[in-house]
Length: 408
Image 1 (spheres, rainbow, N blue to C red):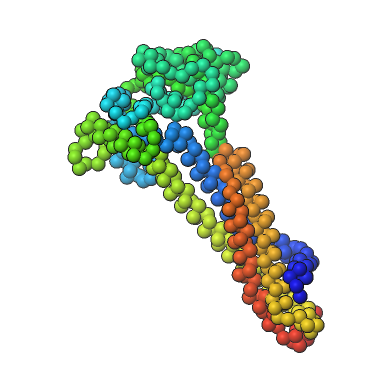
Image 2 (tube, rainbow, N blue to C red; image 1 turned 90 degrees about the horizontal axis):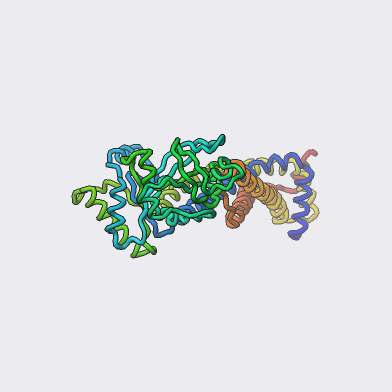
């Protein structure tokens, strides 16, 4: 018996027991779909994080009071005991760092923006030095960005996100309009390009003002985050980070041999931390998917054993008519493999669909990789072969005389 004939017999047998076949598919479908969905979402998150971090440039690093990503309570407590990084620290780095192409500083808080009868809550209020918009790679699509004079004179001017332009200054040209940010009037001089949503949260609900104007409202003692651009990666980045670390330790009177009283982070450190977190999450879910695959494989084995018992007389007739052990083995092995592969195909479709639904509803980024589809199908097929071998061998080893005596 050739492969095509064995495949036709296997498909006819599966089609004759549609409900049983469908129930057998469920375990494989659930396992493969969860595997595909998780890989797609984690890939999307990794790409998003890398894109957002490298949007500032791979040669940009930050100096902050506490780590941008805190992984333990002890780390948080230790960071809170540190002195705040002040605007004077930024000015010192800006003046003294010879290997820094550009230096900027950021402060932010959440506040309310009002224009006429329209307002928005939970708006990200940013205090920026004039160098920050270019360092953020922020394109001002209307108007202009900040200039040194805005920062020197604490000018009450603002750059706004598209949410503010569309939802607060409804239907008006935003340039030149006066908005109130936590009760303080600012004149809009620019509108940033649209950033979209992440995890369902808009990235365009923000207002940026000169950091000196920001501090007139929110105080000068709040910690700032210093951004520095080295100009290129590799050795220039290492030399710039070393210089800034030395300058900060000097400014903050850190004793030799003592740890830094601040955090200096590069884009690689952000990505490394994120990949550790996403890797742990991915491992846990893949582990759960593996358990589901094993359960699905056991279900396949159980159903195939039932099928062998039900078709004992059929196997006896086929052997009496000249079918060899290898023919019977191939037929049942094909049945279990086909069930797994069909379950894998449906699992891939369902997994991609789930990932896309999560992206549409929550705004969580997703990115489908072709290798994950091949892995899902390969694993599904492997499960069918592995768990189908025993029932297939049992069918192949049946004695034709004993099989023919079996009751229908």
